[in-house]
Length: 236
Image (cartoon, rainbow, N blue to C red):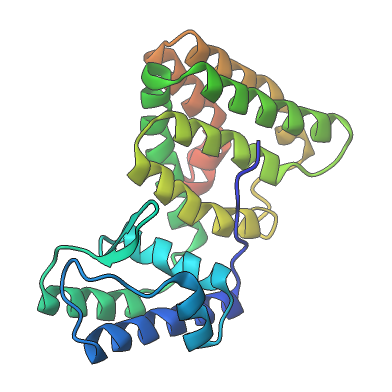
């Protein structure tokens, strides 16, 4: 399984903010209305002098906030919102600060307790194959004494995909890079926890496979025990 994860840093954030600012100016300069089409990624890349991947990431972010809509084989369009509301939303997005790590972890917990239930009800055999591949990759690295933070999160992203809720899936993709960047910085997990995670992941996988949403939620909550303690200072 391959899931694209874009590692974020201060430079990347500045690039994204710059692109969004230029997109706002372009929309105003061209007097674009709801339903109007934006230029292609290639054209925007050339116009703004940034990479196409950076343009794509900025568009995905604005899609998440409901400002843009991408249509397969057609392009990217202005969403059906008024000019005043759109301008105000873009200004607010540009003022957004990066969330602190505890906020990201707390959001992840709340989000995944819901996605794992939905995944249990909606998963397909293909979804199970993706989860199995991610879990096997995680297990192999941990048993080999290697760090497996990315493989861990790939497993959870596969669960989000299986929920068949595109908004939740997009939200997971947005917060995942920051979590990867900060996991080791804040020493949330250690080698023993990674080893324990093998069985915890297996339990979650089996509950999803059995299509048992309540059990899946319970196993996910047990898996997040240390994160609960980290966020809420919960004692044993």
